Length: 237
Ligand code: BTN
Image (cartoon, rainbow, N blue to C red; front, side, top):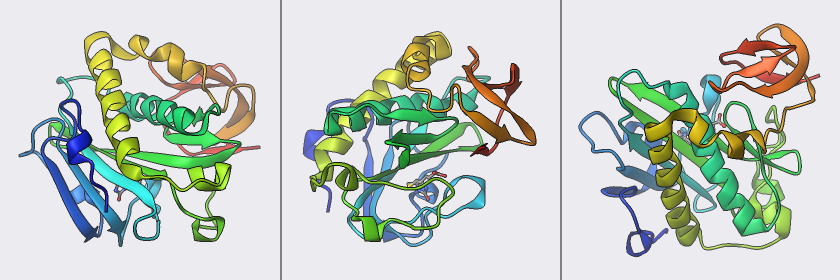
């Protein structure tokens, strides 16, 4: 069980709802909750990924939580996956002492494998931001048939970790980057995101368009063959 409450240092993580098991943490938060509320579990029985996919992890191995955000009206909330991805990538880098990349729009990668995924769901005026970070899974415990091969921090460096300090640090980083984004938009975090772009220079297909990924524009859209793409599933060609 994660014991993060004594380690919290900011607004994010308060209040904290913690359950041993749930279908998905995404439904434990809603419009009645304040910004910064977190729902955390050791095991999801119906974890959700993007595009209707499942997100699976054995009990106690991963960090699986949702965070409630109340972005200002009209803010481009599709950028939140990138903002959160930067926070996750930085935490992963600190833990592993290796560089991490962001695979637009929502994956965090190490050594060409996905270690974390982010799911941002709008509910009325709020956003429930779900994060799944593979921490202590062994190779056998990772799903074998994902579109992007999976890794955990443990499969990268062989170490098992206490998830509590990792989560506490991640919540601080999420709060910093989110606050900067609210104040100054994507420009505030653009360099950190752009310098970790996994797709840049690779030949990809997204939404029927094939071309070389040319990086992100200032709105966080992926440039493919010079044309901006708002959202979609990227395949490496
Ligand atoms: C993806 O990679 O497609 C997104 C994965 C998001 C998984 C997290 S785990 C916590 C939260 N609850 C869910 O059911 N999904 C998100």
